[in-house]
Image 1 (cartoon, chains in turn cyan, yellow):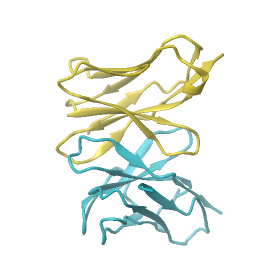
Image 2 (tube, rainbow over the protein chains, first blue to last red):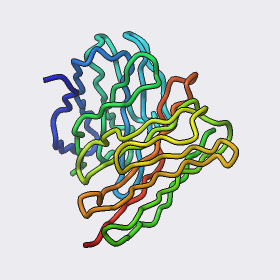
Image 3 (cartoon, one colour):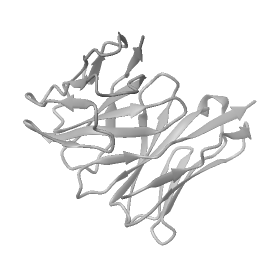
Image 4 (tube, each protein chain N blue to C red):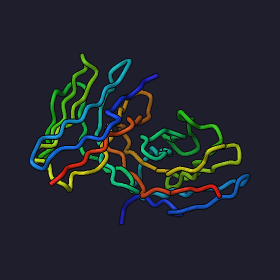
Length: 113
Length: 112
């Protein structure tokens, strides 16, 4: 099946730990995004990438890091510098012309314990 | 920077009525505007895309309008059904900055 796979679905982190959220796609899309969603809120852009080995900060990049070593993969690391990491994280992809729909994964719910 | 505003309060309507959701933006008009549906605990799903030179776009019971003078898009669901209950998000694709920006979403509740 074509699509976007985020893993894990649920993730628990102790304070002070780094954790990495996985996002894999087989849609052959160039653009990939990471968004954060808090309860009752919209999506806020963390990082995005238009091409392999290149990525840009979004509106709330502090405390997060990404890599884009392969077209299919765009992992997000939530570092200990992120003070309020508990949220729902969504990965998305978009086709080449930027005038097409975005496809989303099912999300990872991260909780700090 | 570009800001997007959607009705933050939930919209409650009776089954069979038309639901109208609003998306307002500041600054310059986007090249494209998109609408998504999100169910609880799930990722958003694409519904419709409208370009800046289009006034209206339809898909089955859905209709989207785009007024660049008012800097506003309206999203209509006609003959609404309880299954339409969800959060609806608008998103701006600026076309040149290469990023998709989302609004806060409006939660729609359709009662039988």
